[in-house]
Image 1: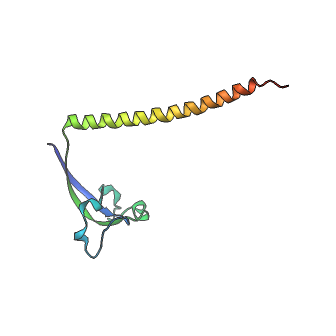
Image 2: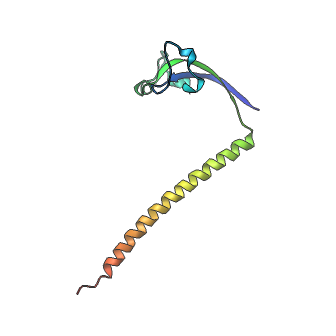
Image 3: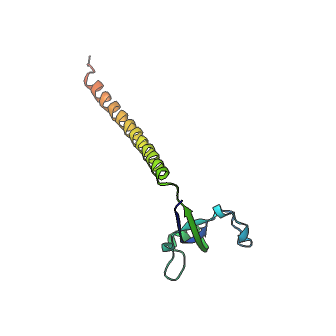
Length: 114
């Protein structure tokens, strides 16, 4: 399996169970891992992260074991198909709404005044 390794920034949000007094007790999935580009030149967290309540707690060395290429492609195709179905459903709903307006206008034209 192909692996990718690199450095990243570890953050926690106000919604995690992170305890500053016992940080080592925090489960790994409580951390948000983001690009080092999210730090200023001085090493501080960029304002939009801080504004949203994130706290810089450290640096992370991450290793990603990539799925086999065929499986990645299969998952990507499945995701695109879901997006396509969503787009088609939204378009059909809008077309139905417009058709309703058309039929309402046509019905007005055919009302006979007494």
